[in-house]
Structures are given as C-alpha cells and as structure tokens.
Length: 249
Image 1 (spheres, rainbow, N blue to C red):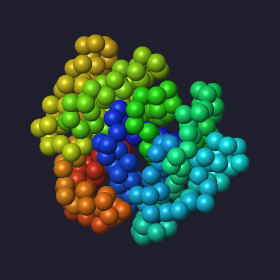
Image 2: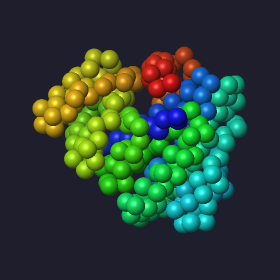
Image 3: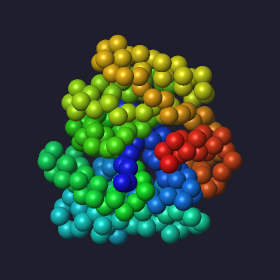
C-alpha cells in the first residue's frame, strides 16, 4: 500500500516547499514512483519551483470540472533515470481548500488516497499554519513531517501544530525535521518540543527524522529555480535529505 506523507509547518518561511521538491527528486532517483500534491492552493508554488505551467490544477478539482487524475501532471523535464514524479498542482491566489467543508475535504483526501495506490509514495505540501484544513490533511496522512527551524517563533508554532493536531484529531503522527540547523541545534529543538509534548499533552516522544544544515548551494538553487538534489548532489543539505529519504523509502 502506498504511504501518504504530509509535509507541514506551523510557521511559513521554514523551507517546507523546497524540502518537498528535493525529497521527491531523491525518492525518484532511488527508483520510487512519487506523487506530489500542492496542498497550499492559496499560495501554491510547487509549479514555480519545478518550472512547469500546468493546464489544469487543484482549483479545477475543487470546482468540480476535473478529477485528481485529470490534473495529475507527469514531470518529464527532470531527467530522472529511474523513478518518476507526478504533480497535482495548486493555484496561487485561489481560496481553494480553505473554502471546503470538512466532509468535502475528507472526500478529496479519500480520492487522493485512491489515486495514491498507484504510487510508491505520496507527498502533500501542506500550507503553513494550523487552520482546520491544514490539520485535517496532516491527520489524514499516514505520517507528518513537521518542519521547523531553531527560530523561537518557529518552535512556538511547531508546538501549536502538535498540540492542535492532538486535541482536534487525537493524532500524534508527526516526525520532526529541523531545517537550517546543525545537529546540535536540532537536538536542542527536538528535546524542547518532545519534552513539552510529553509533559503537557502526555504524548509519546516525538521522533526526530533529521536536520538539514544551512547550505549556500541549497539556498542558491532555490533562488534560481533549480533543484538542489540535481544541481548540487554533493551539497551538505542534499546529503542530509538523502538520510531522510532512506528512512522514508
């Protein structure tokens, strides 16, 4: 059975979307058939990072004029030698998922799970924040990669995400990824969040999936619409992502 992984963050600007793109590429390079959905229709930008111009997107699905299969776009320009990536694009400037009722969004995620059966792994790039739609997407996934940085505001929002995911959905499927951090910083972040979740929410220890160090090559790739996993395969950040991919795959 295909696994669905939500990639979420309490705070915007932590590098979640570029992480999603590069994880998908590394998974495909490992021979996996990967489906990626842009769950942030209001500020969708996976298509921008991947430099594609979709004809149809998730807004058409929400509007009832297309199915998920109709808008699924195979990415052929990445020169992947083994696996493949298919994108379900969102649309920037569209209210999108925030306008759906919980039953409607649940139905959409049920359709996604059915489509995901034909893929090895499905990644959902969830919009940053803790709205009902964002929390439901994380709760409906098989696991959630919660992306944060050592920044105190990011930590506060990450804890809010863990807390609300548990209180509203009785879901504790989050695994932590600390971006722009040394291993020491990541350990400190993990200890702080995991201890708080255990002491105040009575949750089991929060798993730490990995940390991604600050890397000028990775940052340059994002700015120039390149994919670091392809342009700079030996960069420290890419090697850290490969460690995460090993655990996901």
